[in-house]
Amino acid sequence: MNKRIHYEDNLFILTAMIHLVRDICILEGSPELFLEKSVEDLRFVDKTLGALLDPLIHNPNFIDRNEQLDQFFEIDKELSVIATLLIENRETFSKDAALIPEMTETLRNICVNSANRQRTIEQNYSPDENGSMDHPLSSSEFTELFKPFDPKPREKKSS
Image (tube, rainbow, N blue to C red):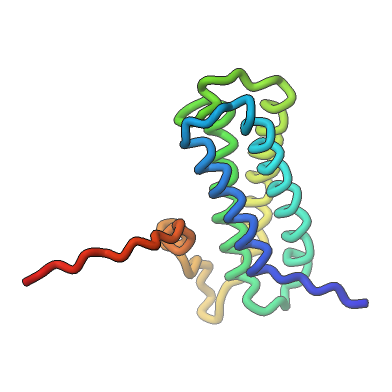
């Protein structure tokens, strides 16, 4: 049976998981309740990104391959940033908790895996029709697209 991978949906879910961990880290929650689960979620995202990227790398004829590689690259960058923040206990609820050595090692492995995937993506990025290697979305554009939805309507300015 042919195995079909739904990259867009899978990458959206992984991005949502990363944003959830980011939001948990920003809030003043209880580290004893959320730190271990947050690290485990990041480990899951790391493992899943590796599993999803492999078939894409080995199929240069994949439709929208460069677009998918761009998304992988941006997600990996965000994953690495959050793992680094947790390791360094900056701007996160982990500043109030001591990471156990196993968690620190897991987070360091995530950063290494992420950097390796980013290099692999750069090495396997195919030039577009014009021979350009430009990414279609900038990092800020990608971040804007995946911002959490704010359901509050914006106020209209009167003239």
